[in-house]
Amino acid sequence: MVKKIFKWGYLIIVLAFMYAPILLLTVYSFNLSPDIGVWSGNWGFDLYAQLFSNGDVLQTVVNTIVLALIASILATILGTIGAIGTFYSKRKVNRILDGVTQIPVINAEIVTAVSIALVCTMFAFGRTYASLLIGHIVLCFPFVYLSVLPKLKQLDGNLYEAALDLGASPTKALFTVIIPEILPGILSGFMMSITLSLDDYIVTTFTKPPTFDTISTYVFDAYAKGGKGSSVPALRALSAIIFLIMIIYLIVQNIVARRGKKDEKKA
Image 1 (cartoon, rainbow, N blue to C red):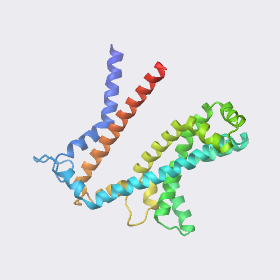
Image 2 (image 1 turned 45 degrees about the vertical axis):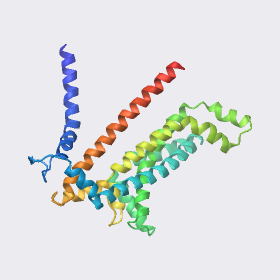
Image 3 (image 1 turned 180 degrees about the vertical axis):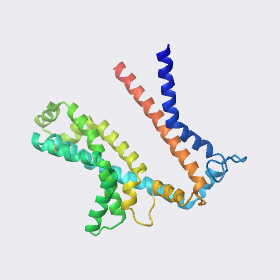
Image 4 (image 1 turned 135 degrees about the horizontal axis):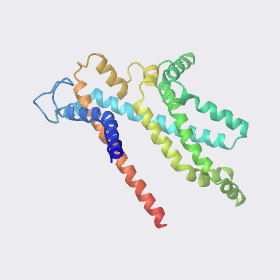
């Protein structure tokens, strides 16, 4: 009984440390106080109205989503090609490529950001949208690779050879046999790439053009100025909306996963 109480108490404390600040921020999104930490007697949806009427914030949201989608699609294509190429290469080459690909994951993000900025400057990219996109692709690529490679290892190696024996070309066998089998890993890598790109601050700061902002850089710059900007209160509403979207996504994902398991049991 004591162990059970201790276990649940520990779990509640951990969850409270993780989610209490986010829930408090959500509550503050309905409080009309201009400063966090100072309660106001006025409550309502005014901050949400300010959010959707603020052109700068909305443009920042669009910038972030478009960048995340483009970077994630390119990183997913490159990561999938890299994983397939590494898996079907010779053992020595496989080990070398596998180790090299994992360096960006282990490496400090600040080192990656500065390196990309320097390389882009050397090749006359400077701090442009191209350098920003390259930075996000480099950030996301290893995670796609690491999501796809385990699915390739689970794949029955005879399937590809059987497709070739039945008359399929290597390209057709790849798209009709290999890709469908590793599709869950590809989708998982794609979703992880979107999450990383949406959330990134360090790489974005070192590679973005001066006039371009994502949500992370916009929010940081707003609060770095003392949190006195006119758009700062509306950012509380934006944070609450992002949190709500993540909760809905997790709920839908769990429902789909449970239905998939039920269908497998029935089959």
